[in-house]
Amino acid sequence: MEKGRSVTLKHLLIKGKRYVGLQFNTDKIIQALVKGLPDVKWSTEFNMAYILNSKANLNEIFEIFSGVVWVNCNYFFDKKPLNNNNEPIDITWYRKRSLPENFRHCPTPYLDRLQLKKYANNTVKSYILAFETFINYYNTKELIQINENDVREYILTLIQENKSDSYINIAINSIKFYYESVLGMPNRFYQIERPRKEKKLPKVLSKEDVLQIIAHTNNLKHKCIVSLLYSSGMRRNEFVNLKITDIHSKRMLILIEAAKGKKDRYTILSHTLLKDLRDYYKQWKPKKYIVEGAYGQQYSGQSIGRIVTNAAKKAGIQITVTPHMLRHSFATHLLEDGVDLRQIQVLLGHSSSKTTEIYTHVAMTTFKKIKNPLDL
View 1: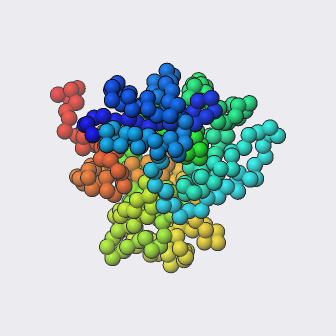
View 2 (view 1 turned 90 degrees about the vertical axis):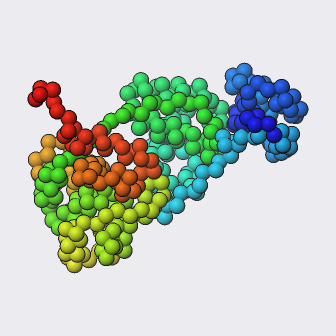
View 3 (view 1 turned 180 degrees about the vertical axis):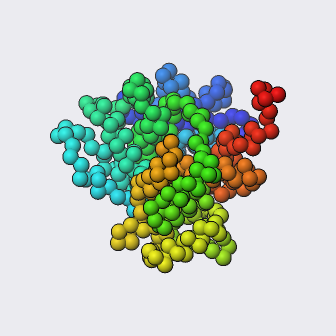
């Protein structure tokens, strides 16, 4: 097989029929082999050859190119692993809704696939609502007939309506999920452009402000919630799933299981907090989770957010404080205290060091050595 000679398989939908697209650079050998495929055609729209998507034709592709041309299937077969999410999907809200008579509901296979993929409940809700908004925008079109241009027109409408980049990305993801995962056509809309990400700096509190927020909590339970969020740098949803057995007091570590990206990690445990946690445990007697709601159920993320926001208001903080700001503050304060960026990356559970490097833009140590020209 000659180095660099390859054909990339793509999913195409032309006039309601599924085809295998064959994308390749100009090459006489590849062209000759492609012409030998059954009933092969050329698409000027997609700038590639294509044949009917069938098991027999796929076998023919692999046989005819075997040993001569490398067949790139990365865009054709779905190799994404299932999420290791133990949280059961709850769609009671979906069934209880009151909707207009002609409203197009999310297709049942869509719900089934979300459940099979073990997506988190927040993701499930976001995808369902976003996809239903999309299919009701094209309420007279069969879903299989919607093409790239239709999706682009819809995304343009969202931009004109001043929807956030986050909302637009969720909309695109929900659409791609149906055509690529439910219908089994990975990277079906691979040419759809996404909005460029805004490069916003994280909002960080001073240590003094964090201590004031902790001091203005209503009770020991709320104090432990805010202290634990800040001193561990964990995310809100990680906190909600935190169990009593995840606190390893002998090693002064906290185990965070199935975090973002479905990866386990450890973070540090505060000696000061450990004393409060022991007092809290004696007083509140939680059974499974560190913080529990009624009847031993998990505490809601919304309740966690309200506790942090209300304590910050009482402390006189002029901006709205969220649990994620406590995570940003944890990382920034560690960096300012001389902790290595790689260690902070491990504590936060970032896959890439580039994500952690954002804190160098807000840490005071970055600016302390710089002499202001007015003070020279």
